[in-house]
Image 1 (cartoon, helix red, strand yellow):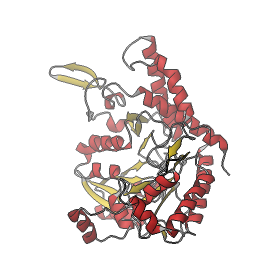
Image 2 (tube, rainbow, N blue to C red; image 1 turned 135 degrees about the vertical axis):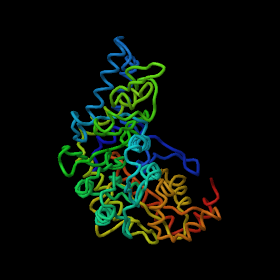
Image 3 (cartoon, rainbow, N blue to C red; image 1 turned 180 degrees about the vertical axis):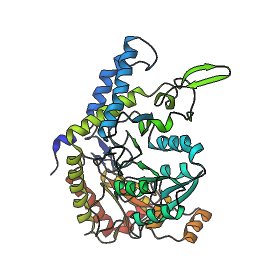
Image 4 (cartoon, rainbow, N blue to C red; image 1 turned 45 degrees about the horizontal axis):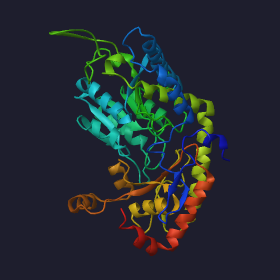
Length: 438
């Protein structure tokens, strides 16, 4: 099933890493939900662009004109990728999804602070904490961690027009569940509110369509990061309606944000320039643009199909290993991205992650993945248990997470299954060997 051409697109895919015994093995990166490696096309494009790199929006120098042109073209590439109307919407470049959501929270505060923000119980901290300065309420999830759209509608009814914004993840970074963002948008718009989708996990793995502005299923705001979609160099985007920000002062002021300044007068320029204070990250924009072009050439549907195959293959094998607890809804598991979280009975999540790295060269993530309330819910922890962990500073709860990219292979999954079988059969040996190793 694997297309070997996918692996050939990635920088460093055959890098070898050391094991505990001193031997070297080809690294298997199953931590793509945190950060993906770079596309070779991105690295090559950056090297070709560097001789022309200059400031943007700053003058008539030839290199500056070239840099400005490429920087602005990246906005169009991004808008086209998610089917956003460039006449009414804009791309604001930021460092990452976290900054994008904080920026939106800051820019909307004066208008929205007397209303209600609806978040969800499954959010990454980056789409929860920035909204806590507002009046915030949370849409419930079920025992499997799946979002309740019925509860979304009930809360919109209960607040009777006071909800200014509904903000939710497109796909969970813990369970991989994909939310029905367009159904959520329909419900939200029915009650005259707007919707933000945190697309950090969804956009790199699925077709995303913001839809026409007049569609009930339209996504009003979308945020995502380059570093999760094979584009390092530190950029992310906030896609938003131009008119929403035109008459709002920027959250950061300084160079590039103004048209005219005197000692007692400031005239702000237009968005998006107004909302990108200082010298922008030109290399980041170039990297994200070429990464999106590469993803488009592969085809997001093709990526979805392959990663779904890899995920199903992994789940099928993990279900056959005794004492492994999987955190997902096995009955309704179709709508998901390539993320799997699990624990091994009686082995701390941190120890399991160490074993995978030191024994098999497998990079996995462990902990709560910046989604503490959601993981606590998945672990069915009571409020008292959570408070006791905080008070005593005891070992924090958590899971082990594996997350695939388009370049991962069945052979790498087989290596994972092999080592997990060994660990389950020899628990005490591995616990004694690795529990105290940093």
